[in-house]
Length: 343
Image (tube, rainbow, N blue to C red; front, side):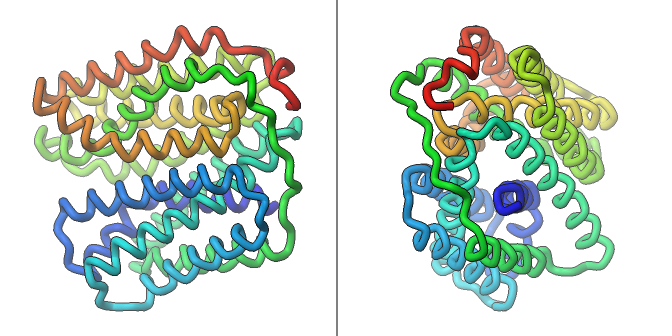
């Protein structure tokens, strides 16, 4: 239960980032550019936290990180006026803490046969929780930060109640070429999601809020399927998810109607979350894989801006598709899970 809850909470925090960033912006009065920088700081620090947590055996550090995350979110939810300096430092600290805690289930469950199911179902629960929270916050006009603080408090209780066993994978024979080929894809996925609302506004397509909310359900469906896919079909499912996310992502920025944009967003979400748990299951360690993903995702806004500056949204669409094609050859050379040392 602890593993599932931690993964689900992390996914919920990331999926609802636009909403709680807007709340923080209202409290601090920062500009839209600063909000974008704040999002990058959170993801970069989370990536660092995952890298730190993947190698730690210190239970006090992990529990302390949970307390830091709860304290930071609670402070943000209760304080009305936040200075820019405090906001960035606090957001970085909370991101770092969440990364350390997230590494706990990702680095301590992968020697079990149920690792893929744990990751997939945990992410699916997080996506469903994100959808429910967004609906509740929109209808009742409550603060999302308050809900996140409550969930963070539950996380602390679980961390003190039961800590997953300390199991670590021997990654001495891991082939880094496969993950390196995926970095452009992860960066382009960050760029893809960063410019959706901007693209919609420039094309006079209206708000994409309903489509983006629905994409959480498709993301959850993809994660759930990834968690239960038979081992013999894992490679095929991973490649299908990768290509679906890449081609649907490219088509989004070539579409001219709200319906086509919305449908491609749904397909991208499903493909990405079908692919991602399967990727984490076969990388050196899931925690390190998550760290690389968060790092690349944080860089997506910068790379996307460069692509748009060079060739408009057509160039961004081409980059998204090309990034998926670059990753496919390495995916086909994936070793069977039984060949992974000490799996």
